[in-house]
Length: 154
Image (cartoon, rainbow, N blue to C red; front, top):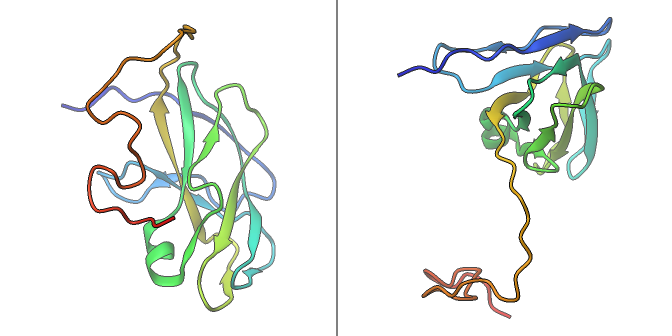
């Protein structure tokens, strides 16, 4: 069962090198391109804020998630500094990708290269209820590997 499409309004800025698009019929994310006139090199271990050349109008009740591209991560160690960047529905600035190079070599993006992807997803808002204590569970306060092999040693 396929959901009805949600309308996403996109303003193409003058420096945009390509509108976001789905790479395949089953893709969850829209590819975002580098909006630059010249190549951008991110040195090994460094970070960069890369422009996409677009502004978006995300419908109320949704968010945009800027996510890394798996091919860049697997092949070159390129990811996002914030893992997933949130674009709130009331944000109207240019969408940026906060890139980090975890690789051992510098990586150069060419103008128009796909640098990240944008996934539009529903947001559930909650009402906060302050309580004296939260409910108990069998797990309790166990975390950081407590339900399996403990990977951290302190």
